[in-house]
Length: 168
Image (tube, rainbow, N blue to C red):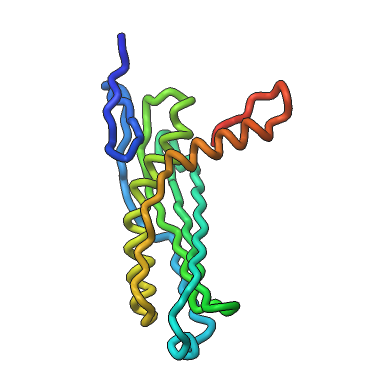
């Protein structure tokens, strides 16, 4: 019997065998922070910002076949040496994943799930930045497949010789 694979359009393939399930149960905002440490001084300077973006994904099994995936994005915008604003979001989702082979689970949790959460996080960050009276900040798309492949390659490269690296 061959396993039928259906592309998701984001480069992630989710198996479609009858006993396999992948379903988004809920998307929710777990944490949101916005700081403008320069205050009004930020609006009096020439707007030539440097933008730094950090990304992290954390997954945990809630119960049975339900998993919480939390996508954390931190954006720091600086004017020269000073921070104009800092925005951090923890966009979370509850996913039901059942019947997949164990070796496929890390990839689904670290690619398909964050890919679903990212547009929500991007919109929220843009909204809070605009409400802080700064220019709109639309984060560029992120290739979670490439990030996962890079993390797996790095884990294999740093694993002690003779010991297989485990995928996250």
